[in-house]
Length: 353
Length: 272
Image 1 (cartoon, each protein chain N blue to C red):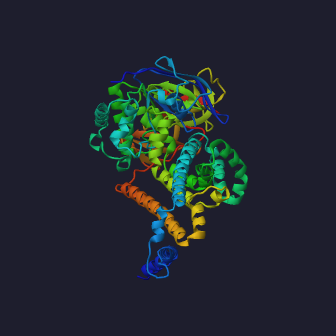
Image 2 (cartoon, each protein chain N blue to C red):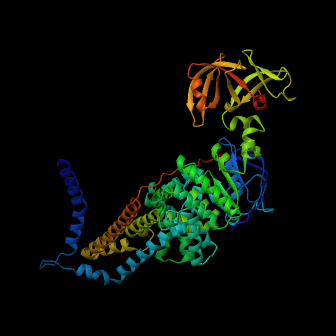
Image 3 (cartoon, chains in turn red, cyan):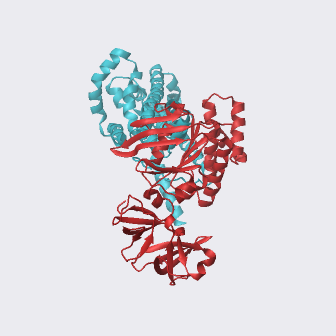
């Protein structure tokens, strides 16, 4: 029904009162691809989305859709469907009329408009709610209708601006899977902005991590998680333990004298102060001998398949370690444990950065 | 029980306070001549006095013109300020509220020279009072429209409409206007009530509107002037009552099912 279109953001700059929100952002989204932009508050991800949608202007740079420069094209002529964080249904219109709004503006006949609105409401699972007004629907239903409304105009690109953030956890998971299903079915190029890492990693073809108005990394979810390109990405995505130390040979010496094995590269010569970043799942609790770190279990948090241990080191630092839940009984609160670090999973970062 | 009695007591006192003068007006305007009894000749004479009929028609036209011009000027301006230059909201509010604190006589002194130009270009029709009346109703209309605009998520709704292909005109007519229908109605009715009761400016600028005519008639036929005044008051009350009924119906229909929670609005300035 809708063919994918390539989207390119080229060297985008945008500042608000001198504070840069976009600082040379480059992004390429392939036709039919689902790309999520992830980052902390103020990183510029929503600004990037709004610039693509024509709701914000840029100080410098280009927005190309399907190879066509649309930087100066007003929002209402861009043919982009957008779903917002806030509920954005027109309160005086029923669900069906909301979905048909864009079609009426395009002079689609009343009969075709009703048929198409009905099809899209069926697609989002709300065929029976067509006659309801927004105030008669739940938040999840309203966002579904908003999605149907955005899709009704057969947009070249679908823009999703944190559409799930106002919903409760269960509806969120359900709706994000529906969004992915519909996006795959329609093969529509989609840019999704969220601050929820799990959401982004779960449904995207690629995830872009932004910081200070720039893209730090744009890769498949597994790559972003397992092979972060920068210390920022490593620390932002998932939970990360950070150890301060000094590089020596192929390891890092911690202040307490422990040695952590790490992939030492030329950027961090021997003697330089660094931080070692290790995910909780890359620390192993050893029972068959000494590890690189020893400590005492402070707390256990059951997370389903894994249990997260907080382990207090002699230095006073607390590290988090994931163990399979069925083996968590072997490490009760107060038990002394030895921890080993997988050198291939430990990442070095500048001490300050 | 005592609380209920207290409420009824308050209602009775207030009702008496408001209704007694109206009853007095009704009694006076229907009082018979020397022979006594009730007489509706003053009410019948309303339609017989051409000067009065002209004044009534003028005031009604002024009410409609003022309402339309006020909405055409104020609503797009306020929407624009809300969406594009929210820093100017306080300034616009201040400017709109100014007519409240400027005495009518000062307004006339200031505006009289301007009106000599208005008369020069547009003729000496009483309908030119529309311009000064728009200024006069600004404080009330602004308050009514502001409450309506603040109650809706104007930014998100307008952006949603624009992303669907609506230009600014369409956004205003098909998104904003239906969303603030109650506020627009309220502003229009306040305007009508104010224009129908306005005397000072029309009198000082020498334009014959309803209240000026009532004042003149009062000097020769007190019963007729009271009948016209009461009719004008009842019309204004009727309009306000209609407004409250329409507003009440809208609220009731919205309370049929609980409202879905609304997420916190996006903050201005640098966005995430």
